[in-house]
Image (cartoon, rainbow, N blue to C red; front, side):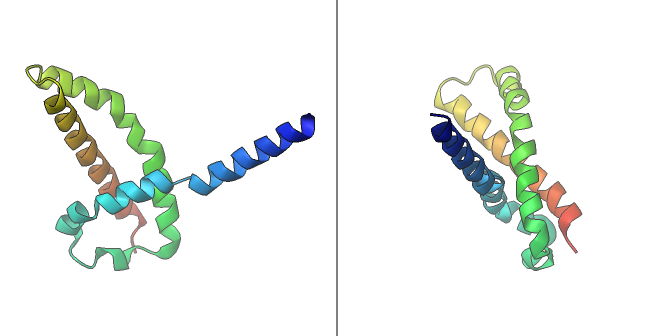
Length: 111
């Protein structure tokens, strides 16, 4: 019985390490058009390869900190929106928050 739990724990740890930073990498990829506006077309060449993974991990950790405040912001600033309108405004603000975090973390990670 204990061996089974040990195996399950090991698989969860290894699986968790494999996806560490993956949401941040996806968010950084989605933010590339916004970053190109600030840093120019060749901005990815100025990002060292060994800085990409820490940047993705930083985005994975920091981006969720905006979920609750942005939800409250949408509720206070746009109380007339309901349903999908509110969802769209929330998603747009979450995208802008992710793009802002991507820009800040990229600024400190580049050459």
